[in-house]
Image (cartoon, protein in one colour):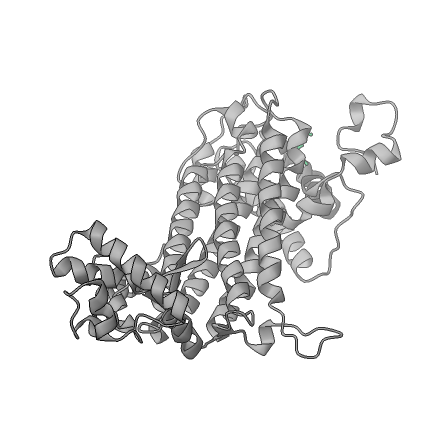
Length: 460
Ligand code: ARG
């Protein structure tokens, strides 16, 4: 097939160079957006009397037919075409003859592709937000069921203080809520139409860029045509937001992996989200969580690839930018897959409250509360801290816990100890007492749950 730009050339492009140059294998994903953009463009050309209304109608009819044929699988992509734009336009001309050749007036593939990615990523962003909401819903299910489920909270992966499992889960909800905000924010900045910037300098036709922007649901137009065709900041912004989602998912995944190990046994993943071993019959492996942990690296790599594509390229369009799509599509696909599998995995996991409580009973996680007890009876915190340290030392040496140490034994350390100390170090009481805003008490958890629910109900 003759190239669209064949006029200036006396020789055909070398076959291997042709394949090397082609992007249709990955930009064919944007066929809907490409056609949607062309329909808006043709509408505007007619409204501005650049093409006739009847040509516009023929073009739009042809484009709509191509769209429905592609949707129904009646039309297949021609992978010999250079890119999606060079597939749709000749296909249109094949169908409606020379009228199709009028479509590319006052437009270039440079603004066309800048438009298509924005339209495509705007939809992807909405899908990802919807998937995050599903995950938040799954977290809420577990949080509501575990408002009073006590487990050890950790620092340095050492048992630290008793917390409620719901409190731990809500921490992840807060991260994902911020992730949604970051996507929303990036979309706001991205939502300006570059269409009509043409190759880089604008056009001599009297076009109406505001009109196409409005037809395509943008908040306005990009104000500099050079920037319009060469800006891919929005890709970096979205991909950074995606990378952070993966950071959060990977931390969560890592905890799920730990929690489902025999060493912890805090949770048991549903059979539908675990796999067995080909040799060890007892195994139930948290493969989904491990893959989420691995795929985090893919999304980080995609972000780095995008930054590297943009680094140092002069204005305006350069062919390097053609391969921005592979990186950003891969990144959003990966995030979508991870979120889709992670949400039901969390929702269906069973929580072993008994194991969590047992773990909370070992490791002296109520030692801070014992020190606070002495402080309330008049000891300075530093002295109380030291006394409790010595008590813990005795327990460790004698295989006892703070709960099993007798009152006379306590009194050997400090005469301020009385019978009421046992209520003070009761694990549930320890967690419940953390009434500070944002703490682990049930009252605080309820505030958090309400916040998450309100967030889910608000349509963003
Ligand atoms: N396939 C190209 C891309 O995705 C379209 C723009 C090509 N423009 C050009 N002047 N070669 O970047």
